Length: 190
Ligand code: AMP
Image 1 (cartoon, helix red, strand yellow):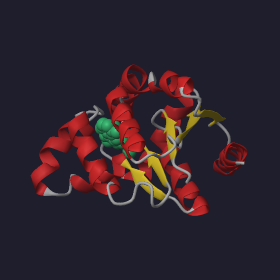
Image 2: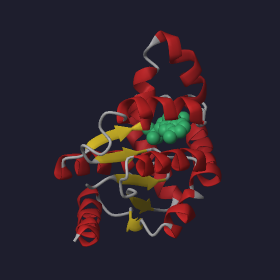
Image 3: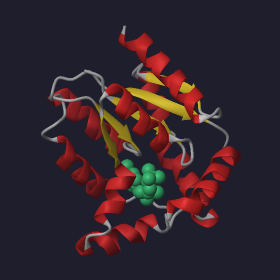
């Protein structure tokens, strides 16, 4: 069973590629950012979640782990999953590993989309016209990138050491990146 993590900085194209891969490979798309934006519509959690999202900070591990687990419990091991935006910290990765181990599943393949920071910023700014996301403003983008480098980028070494990391050039157009990913996945699966 194929389980994937799509990894990269804000603006790398994770969401776009994850949606395409989910369709092409028949995977369940789990986007932590989408889940949080959805949960933020519910009055009970809205203030708490928005206080992080609006500043570009990560929500606490306990909260995101709980929300992800709720969506995984019944499905992990039954259908393939593509994780988009999760894990973002070492403790989130550790939690996911343990879940996979408990279910006796092979750990997910990690697709890392690589691109320069100025390209990522330009992409987010151009998407901001349609995205309606309160965190697609330059000040918040800068904070999200800082946190990415500090808390999330170290996961690359972690997955590299597990030999489950595939690096993909994230600079070309959407279709080209998608082809590069699917070709690499085929090689891994065969
Ligand atoms: P994204 O849609 O992946 O860019 O995520 C949007 C925002 O949601 C991030 O800037 C964080 O504030 C929050 N977020 C998403 N995924 C996570 C995660 N795995 N851990 C903590 N916060 C997250």
